[in-house]
Length: 366
Image 1 (cartoon, rainbow, N blue to C red):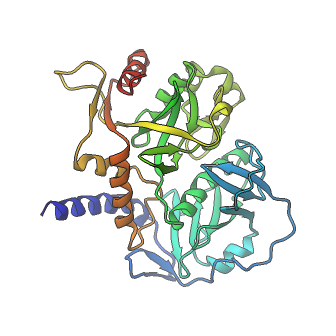
Image 2 (image 1 turned 135 degrees about the vertical axis):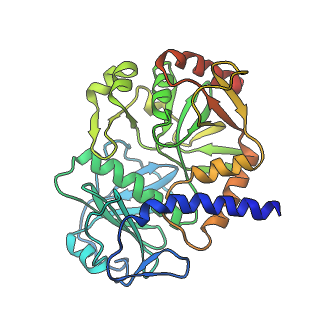
């Protein structure tokens, strides 16, 4: 009975997440696939399409070797000898016209996400980019839309396309911001607007290093978990950026999709490329604390609540293949057994942040 209740609760979470996508009316070619998701009678992802001769740069990001025709500004070129995990190529408009006909228009939802007939994924973020991610997650063909700013295009293509690629490769990633201090890393989970970036900026101003923002990819190392570093950028509201990272804010750029500044925090390059041991996850849910608790509280999350938080925090929520929920449950179970999760409650005001930072360090024993 208990397992049935868990399954129903997690299914409900995914159904809520998919509701946003349902506002985007599918093209006439659309049909329902066997998993209940959107599938389209389009051509195959151009895996065998001959590439034009373009220089490719090699990067190590999120613990993967990525080869890209797009010169990335927030990731250093590397000489990693491991096999290339994902290749990003620039695609002409006719590629999308051939393989995603009927999908290439903006809609009410800010993003269109559709599984094509061969299992590849078409993505379109209004006014920013469109891309096709191969069914095996090893190739991304992308292009900018309109006159979008180069750094906005880069930031969103890398985050969304790599997320989709990792999902198709069978991995689960978390929507989190991770900072490192005193030899450990802590991950901040929460819905958009929960305060993850502002708290991270305060910690960075106090000497912490940024590990990753938005997309957290982890690997399991024995009984521990390693958080892999992402691009050197943090998205911040202007007021928080100017208050805590003023020098970085002056060099930052505006992200047209999120309405935030993208800044490169100080000492970001110091994060170990091999990743950092993840000591704890903190869920930024309700503001404030119960009346019988201090103004800032960290409470261990136990039981089914851990699984719910982790499942709710997974990336690429619009992808709902038949085995996805089972995979999310396995991932959540393994994470819950390896990393402690705490509910972090505090009033969302700048004056409280020093107390929040102290509570984080105290909780992880630093």
